[in-house]
Length: 365
Image (cartoon, rainbow, N blue to C red; front, top):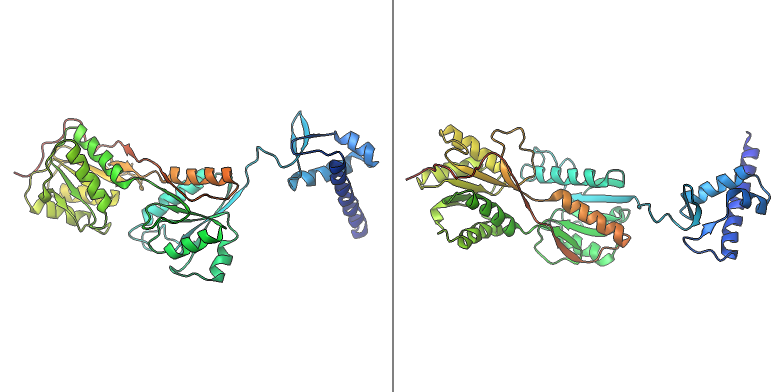
């Protein structure tokens, strides 16, 4: 087919498309109303059924009409088709899911990536937008405006940008995790204090009574959850069982050494992250301590697979996959206009092999 013939063919099809649209308007058809068949349409416009078919195909692709197999063609966009979402996560740099680039939080980013890949599953695209913290300018707004929604992992570095984007109204803004301020955007998190209380209650129900706590000095809510669980069950808190200042993911062994140095009696340990908990297990093994024979142990976050570790870690799982799923459902339901609200998704216990019914022999006095 030469170029002139192709241009005539395309022009004819465009004319037929315009004629069909005018005909829909003249018939006063509304969204959801059924359109006559293609052979009938071909007779009205005095063209071949093939020409009508191609024109109708393009109108379907443009969302003007939609088809139902065995039922016909209808006016409007397909109510059963979900809009493909274009999403991004803002991070200080690329490859922040790798330990060498993000030693403290790589496992958290990996967990969120997994949530996006699982939840989108052909429903849209997901990108990383590397932005320097506190960078708020026209270039930043232009870069992010192409997305239906942008996601942040907390607000410690991007609080001002979150507020600025929320004030503009587009793209949608979602913060996954804890925030320091009540930003006017969609915030999805879990109640950290309740999550630790849940884990502690699991240990207490299993028979443990002298439960130590190892964690960061910055994790105040986690420490409060620990103390709350003790108070609810009438167990007396012992400050000698609390080791704070275990701030780095590499500090688990140091926390275990400090606890052993104090020579205080304990039969279980709650550790505020799984990575630290795995180091605690390695440290205790070097001292001849059996898990869970001598001491029970529970981690917190569930961000990493512990299947390859022995014993398999019992932990409290922060529901990152559910965080993402909730955000996508709200984006689809709202047409991309997210209302400012906080959604709390509960944590769950992931059973493992590091604690058992009946407690443990314990260490110390």
